[in-house]
Image (cartoon, rainbow, N blue to C red; front, side, top):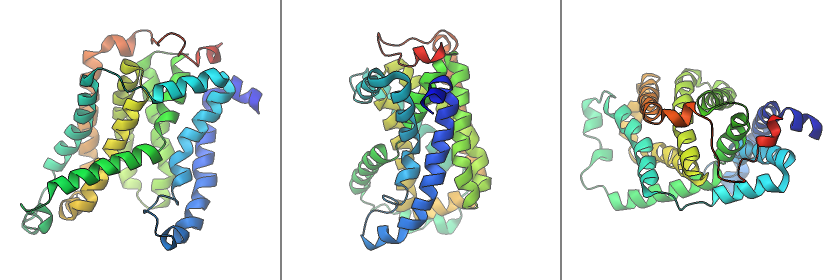
Length: 291
């Protein structure tokens, strides 16, 4: 098995991530939901643990077999790298908020929603902000996707091709990974715009990762994007119901705004996406896998 992974690391990662997520994660989900509730744990903290961690577990297995300790040291170094230009942290805010706010703005609001308590002027915005930061921290720690998509899969692809085709392939596999869950839980109509979302954000997260050499940046961006929607659902129920009622058009709008932002990044940084990929010295852990 190790020989196959070394010879076919991209196929191996893809098979592993689906196996861990669904062959292990789905039974775990059904077996632990009641236990999670009886223990008073945070919703989905225990039950979705394997499904959320699937990309990271698959990625680390492949990295360890392909590049050994050097690959794992590189992963940890990039995951802890926070000293980057402050402008990239600002970019995270723009990447997260601009498409979200734009998609919310185009959702038709009925009169009852406009007058509902979730839009009250007396809302405690400081408390919501604090809970939002807690949500980012929680999702950053638990969703576990970026190690798989950006570090492992994108790293393997960049040993064979340039960034633009690599981020497209990552986006397609990323969307396909979500697919079974959406169909199993009768959300197929929402999965189709997710393909556009994954393609757009694969460009954006790939840009963040390659420009900074920091895995922490796309991890934070992914966590903040999820936290934005979760906070919106929990603290603005009227607007959230209107958004859901307008689906899948609302999600198609979100995908369109994200793809537009990705196009801006592609246009402004063409050399990064269409030129040869560059890494810091000693950090291209997957280079040997292309031989």
